[in-house]
Structures are given as structure tokens and as C-alpha cells.
Length: 517
Image 1 (cartoon, rainbow, N blue to C red):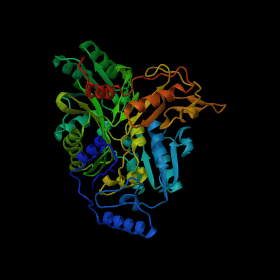
Image 2 (cartoon, one colour; image 1 turned 90 degrees about the vertical axis):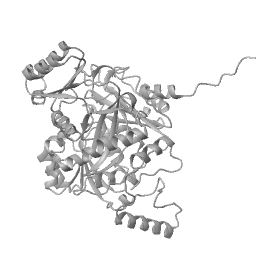
Image 3 (cartoon, rainbow, N blue to C red; image 1 turned 180 degrees about the vertical axis):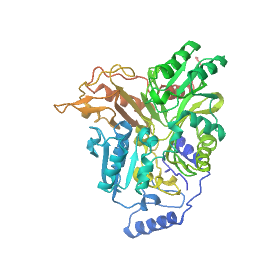
Image 4 (cartoon, one colour; image 1 turned 30 degrees about the vertical axis):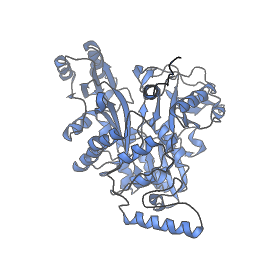
């Protein structure tokens, strides 16, 4: 299969896609050839003038994949954040959708899905019962915790497709120690590290280290609070005390990984994976630090944009060859084939060298929001086929991205975030903000009060997202939308996208200067 782009697609995205999947087979399955020929016949018979060929698909054409999916799917999305809102919003566009549920959902999702507010995303038994009661065809799991807890395995026992990896495969995110050891076993580039199971062992490892900063990571899931960057030995000892003595992260911090601090620019690389089949998505860049200029404590993410120019087409091909495909093959070799969305967090170092910082086993949040804004394909059949119980050929030719465009999202958080934050602030003006062209607002932490007013309920509350022809225009639209929202105490960064915009400025040719006469 081959990712194709219309003639109007911008050169950078076309080149990126071509490089990424140049090694994929073309029209590898008989079903795809049959679907293609059937579509040609239907188009000619109906008199429609769309153009098809084996190597080029018009943007508005249905893919061979979509033709293999029945048009009455019942879908359940697990989660309540901005990522899940974006997924619901995109899935709701599909002609293959019969009904869409979100559990527990949020007020923003209510516009496109039936929210089951009393269905806990952590209650595997209750979810399975709901799936059976409603005859759900596909479960799309947003957050990592249900994946690590084995929700996909429980649904598989019921013969229900679920988009996400098994519990064994989800260890790539659920255990930092496992993922680091996996990368070492399979020759995947990552920072040198030590695994420590006690305070004494960790203190001994620190005593051998001569260079700082150093990175200390809790082994288990910690909701974005398990990574400590220690600039000196004293800060490192403080982090170990938090994990081993005070046990603030509980079981997640009983084992730690101590690794080298890497310098460079971070990027998020995503791929659909089913067995050894991989299909890359657009690269993105998250903004983890709380404050402008990438300063301050780490957060769950204060904004993102796509595509990320730091990942060039050539670099994307190397990442596929050295990280994504070896990861997929390694999981198969170890008896835990991966199925779902694989997210590789990367550090791009000098000279286009790169190393893996971490794996995530689901869409990034807030990167998912910008990807959904740029994806023009029908997302539902892509998710459905990736969730196949057997390794199947993935739909490279169905992934159509907006031509010559960029998307950017800014996270609005409660005052005090990422520390103790205030909840309950009333938020108004979202409808007016969304009247701006190309703007959507995804809810990440909202609820309704007793009077029905929209209020802030979490740390990260809203994702103000915009797409436009250029990243600079998308940034301007997003911040213009924020200015229309009535929430005076909202906390947010004012420089989302700054790295790409600086790079763009550096790469501009100098203006022509005429010599004075």
C-alpha cells in the first residue's frame, strides 16, 4: 500500500508521507484490488467524475479499507479528556457510525456522543457488561490506565474489537524498566540507564554518577508526575526520598529508572501497528513544561502542534527503520504482538541523531487533538481495521491529511496547575470563540454545576485548537479564540509553537538589499 496525496498537497507533507512508507507493498491484498475495481465500476455507472487509479486516490474518495467496513458500527470511547473528545468528534463524522457512546465522557462530548457518566473507565467488569448490553462493535480506549489494567484482554474474551494493545504489550508504557530493557534487547536507541529497586541501590547508582543533570523515573504509571530532572546530587536524593521514603506515588515508585539526561528537541512520532504492519501518522510536538520558553515543572502537556518540522522526511524514514519497525517486530518475537497506536517520544539531538525517551501505548494528549484536525480520512474504519484480532494489512492509502496546513492547540488550565489547583470556576464564551474559522474547543476537564453552568473540574480544562494554512496563522487563531473565552483566571502558555516558528524564521532567505547609488 502507498500513502498518496493529491497534486495540491503541500510538498513537505507529500515528501514526508512518501519517505515514511516507501517500503510498504502496493495494493497487497486481493480484497483491496477488488474494492478498488468495484468503486471504479460504481463511479462510472453513476456518472460521477471522480478519478481513481492504482497509485492515486482523490481526497474525497472512499478507501478500500472503508468499503470493507459495514455501515452500522456501534462504538464506545473510553475516557473523559480532550483526547477522547477529539476522537469522538472525528468518529462522529463517519458514515459507518450507527451510535457513539463515551464513558464517562464530558460536557463537550455531549454534542456528538451519548455520555455514560456513571460508567467508570477503571471498572473493567462494568465496561464489559455495558458492551454486551449495547452490542458494541468497537471500543476505542483513550487513556493508558485501562490498557495497562487489561481492558483489551477482557474485551477480547468477549470477541469485541478494542483499539489498543493487550495488557502484556501495554507494559511498554506501564513499566519504564520493562520498556528500557526491551529497547536494549532490540537495539533501539535510548539513553543509558540503571534499574533500581530500593533506596540503597539507587543511592549507590547516584554515587557512581559524575555528570548531572540526571533523570529519575518512577517505573509505573504516575499521571505525568513520575519524572524528576535533578540538576545536582542533592535534587536527585530529594527525588529518591519522595519515591522510596515518602512513597508519594505508591506502587508506581517502588522501582525507579535512573538515566542520562539528553539534550535536544523533543518530538512525538505516531504509528498504527498491527503485528509487524506499521503505518506512520504525522509527527507532532508537545510542550511539557508549564511556563513559556519551556521552563518550569513538567505537566501533562500545555499545547501541541503538527506537523513538526524537526522531523524531516529523511529523519522520519530513519525513525521508522530504527525504532518503530524494530519495536513491532520485537513485540511479535517476544510473543506479545502489538495492536493499536504506538507513540514514540523522541529526543532529536545534534546532527539529526535521536534516541527514544519513552513509549506511550495510546494517542498523545494533546497531540491527538491536532492530528484529528488535520486528518481528512474517515477515522472509524482505520481504528476498526487496526483493532483486528489477526494481523492485517493496514490502511496506508486511506490516510489523507489536510493539504498545505498546520494545526495547533493551547491548553487552558485551572489556576495553580500543575500544583494544587482551584476547581469550580465558571467558563463562558466558548460558542463565540468557535465562530472563528478553523477553531474547535475540546473539553479536557469540565462539568456542569447545579445551575447548568460550565465549570472547570480538573487541572487541564480546555484545548483551544485551530488549523490554518500555516502554523503562524493557526497560532494566531488559537490565541484569538482564547481572548473570546470568559475565564479571567485561566492559566496557559503564550508561546505554543515557538520552536517551529523560530526554525521557520531562521530558514527564511535574507531579503534582497539593493546597493545605494
